[in-house]
Image (cartoon, rainbow, N blue to C red; front, top):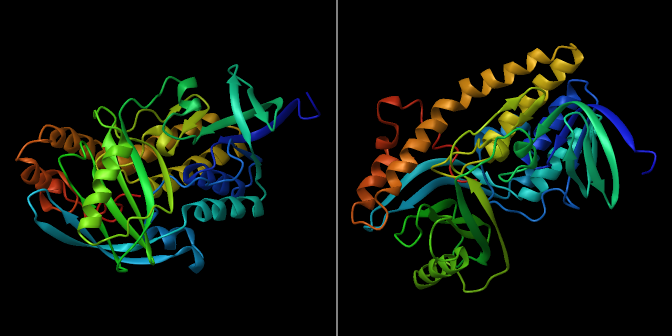
Length: 368
C-alpha cells in the first residue's frame, strides 16, 4: 500500500452517474470534504441511455447550451392496434457522457475530489477498500452514498438489492428525416417494455427495453424493431454505435441503513413504467449530498433520516403507482387487449393517472 493506505473523508460517494455526480456536487457546495470514486476510466462512458431530459431539469441544474443537442416538443406513442397518440413533451436530447462530466466538473470546482478507475471492492463496516489503478487502499468516510447503478455493490452491503429488471439495448442509427419529437412503440414482441426512437439531429437513439424473463435475446428483439423502422422509412439500416444495460423496475428497494444511503438506480428510484431515471437521480442525489453534508457539519448522523422522509414525500406515491400499472400491463402482453390496457397503464393517457392525477409530472419525465 502507498501513502493512501488510510484516507479519511466526510462523505464517500460511489458511482459517477447523474445521482453520484449530483450528490458530490451538492455535498461539496455545502462545505463537506467529499470524495467520489468511479470504476470507469472516464465518467459517463459508455453511454447507456436514450438521453432525453425534461425542460425543467435543464433549468434546475443550469445546463450549458452546448449540452442541449436536440429540442423536443412532443412524444408520439404507437399502439399495437395502429392508433397513434401525440402528447406534449418539452425537453431536450443531451449527450449523456458530457452531461455527467459537466456535473462532475462543477463538483471539482466546488472542492470535491474525484478518483476515476477506482472501484470499491470491500467493506468491513467502517472502512471501504478500493482498487485505484491496481493500487489497493482504504477509505474511512463518516457517510457513504451508493450511486453505483442497478446492480449496486453498496446496496448489497446493506441488503437492499434490485430484483426486477428490464434489459435495454440501443443502437445509434441515421435518421431519414429529422424530427423534433420522440417516438415510443408498443409491440407484442417487445415483451414487458417498448421500443423508442429519440432523435439527435440527423441520427437517432433506437432502442428497446424488454423484461429480462423474455425468451429472446434483447439484440434479437432490437433487430426486429430496426427491421420495422426500416420498412417504415424512419431510419437507414446502418449501426453507428451500440450500447445496453439494465433498468430496475421493481420500485424503491431501500434508501438507507445507518450511515449508508442509496440514490438513483441503486435505490430503484427510476420510474418502473417508463424507465425514466435521470430526473429522479439528479433530485435524489442532490438530496443525499445536501443532507449528508448537513449531518457531518452538524456532527449529527441522526439528520440522515431526513433523506428517507424527503424521498418518501417526493417519489413514493408516483413510483408505487407506476409499479402497480406495470404489473397490470404485464398481464396483457401477447393478447389483443394490450392496446386497451395501455390506455390505463401508459403515461400518455388520462387513464394512467385516474383520480390521482397530479399535474401530469410523470409525462414530463418519460424514458431517459
